[in-house]
Image 1 (spheres, one colour):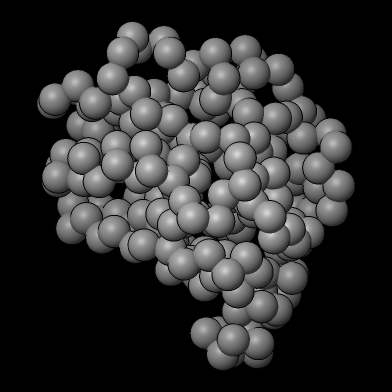
Image 2 (tube, rainbow, N blue to C red; image 1 turned 180 degrees about the vertical axis):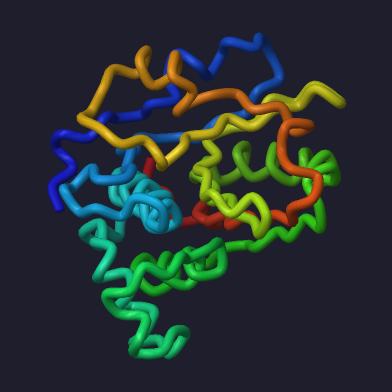
Length: 216
């Protein structure tokens, strides 16, 4: 899969829009989203696309490099690891933060930390953990849930008490690559207040622990 035509660092120009006390991804990455490589995964492939975005960050910023896997290659890895049955191959089954953790560890020898939040209105409890993650490691974070089952790439956090926000890069965009300004205007990249996440949904976050191995 070629990433030459994918937009680089789509969060830029949004990163300082809220003033101070924000903590961001450190290093380059490409924005993977529905149909970006011609493969139609609309409605089910968002977790794969967020994983691909994180893999692109690994290739830009770690000494160990590995081609960003296709959706089919991701499924094959999970089947070979016996995390999924053979029927998972060529299916439209979703993946979440745990599967993202397994693939990153397999391809890059990078362990990941999983944070579980029981309900959306408890996300304030992990603000300091996310702040520390971006300060120490600077890697993108994968976020998924159950009722809110849409995968999200998290590229930063703005710490501001009850009005704290996450910098969301949404993989659900369909279309040709657009300018960062277009993606921000249409809400594909945005600062989302913690209070806007679903209180009825739990959330799992995958935090790649890459500080020691980062070559920047």
